[in-house]
Amino acid sequence: MTDHESAGAAEAGRPGTAVRRFPFAPSPRPECAPDPGPGPDDPFAELREHDPVHLVELPFGGRARLVTRYEDVRTVLADPRFSRTAASRPDAPRFEPVPPPPVGVFVSDPPEHTRLRSLVAKAFTKRRVEAMRPGVRASVQTLIGRMKAAGPPADFVPDFALPLPVAVICDLFGIPEEDRASFRQWCDGLLSTTSMTEEEIHASRRALFGYLSSLVAERRRKPADDLLSGLVRAHVAEDRLTEEELVVFSGGLLVAGYETSASQLANFTCLLLRTPDLWKQLGARPESVGTAVEELLRHVPSLEIGGFTRVATEDVELGGVLVRAGETLVPVLGSANHDPAVFDAPHRLDLERTPNPHIAFGYGPHRCVGAQLARVELQEAFRALPQACPELRIAAEPRRKTGTIIHGLASLPVSW
Ligand code: HEM
Image 1 (cartoon, protein in one colour):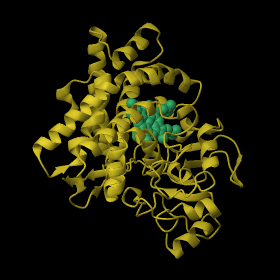
Image 2 (cartoon, protein in one colour; image 1 turned 60 degrees about the horizontal axis):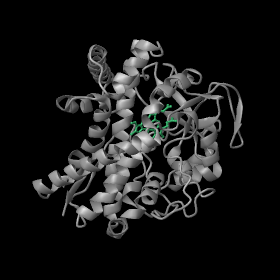
Image 3 (cartoon, helix red, strand yellow; image 1 turned 90 degrees about the horizontal axis):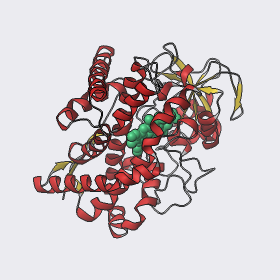
Image 4 (cartoon, protein in one colour; image 1 turned 30 degrees about the horizontal axis):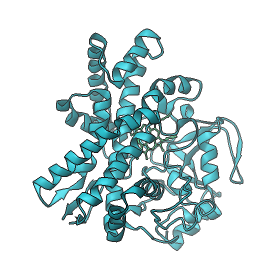
């Protein structure tokens, strides 16, 4: 942050002072700097210290407050006085040109949220996800084998980071191999902030939901042993999901299940390859991959937008500020995960950090339902890659994604 901006950080929100637009540009690049220190690379350091509930302008629909301290972020995520439903209404300030679909686990509050979530949580218990580990391990080996056989150079994003989570989530849903490429394209429409026009977003949503409706109809005729058939059964037998809920819910899960994991696979690889000792360290100690993955999750934020908004349903005191009923808040997960009140030397990437109470998967009722699955994918990838490809290196400047909710790379050229 420049001097001018940091002064602005403390001042903004007072009458007569400018309110900055969020996400800040250029946004931080933690995947490229493992130890940037608490300086200009952390745009939230100043805010955490002096202005922890900071007023900003969102790209669409008005103002919101950035919540940057760990404890305050957890409060916003877990306290029922902060509502996801209210934050998803068409007139609420937001990052995307188009409001989110009005139903589904992402945009509901308890008790509606509890009903929806219980339907899917069963598929993602630790035990069930562990049962998927051998399949994930096999997919990792196949992708490494293919990448090596095609010979250097490679682009790590389309050659490894994208196909691994797509294979895992599509297997879980029973999405046929031949439909997976279009599926990826449609998903982008659910995550775009400014990379697509309003019309393009509507078109890809229609395509994805249309496709899922036909898949649902097929599973109704001919149930299979997959997650989608389970959701269809819940819809038919217990009348617990409406048709619209079923389709939007499946779409949301599919998208959430691949794009975040894919982005973090590429972000983490980029970060580790920028510091070859870390790649070697992981290769030499595959048994410590679990701890290393937790630290990578803490260190590299997965969302370009900081966190999904909430709206206060009543006046609440937060971080010494009176938040008024109706105000929108952005719980900035990446900032919480670098809060020095909780993490020693928070800007240091320490692959052996314990304890590590990061909230990269959120906190409270909406915490990530796929966290165990994401962990299995990341652990299997980073157990195998540094051993199978010890000489992997960045071959050309990576290209970042822009105009989307997720913080990630469009391209990561590698060689060996
Ligand atoms: C590295 C990968 C991942 C990260 C960093 C991540 C992060 C998150 C975060 C921070 C939330 C909480 C949002 C909030 O409270 O506002 C969340 C929710 C969610 N995630 Fe993930 N996620 C990942 C992978 C996955 C996977 C693999 C799946 C599914 C297969 C998944 C499905 C979901 C769903 C359905 C929710 C909504 C839960 C609810 O609202 O109750 N995520 N995720």
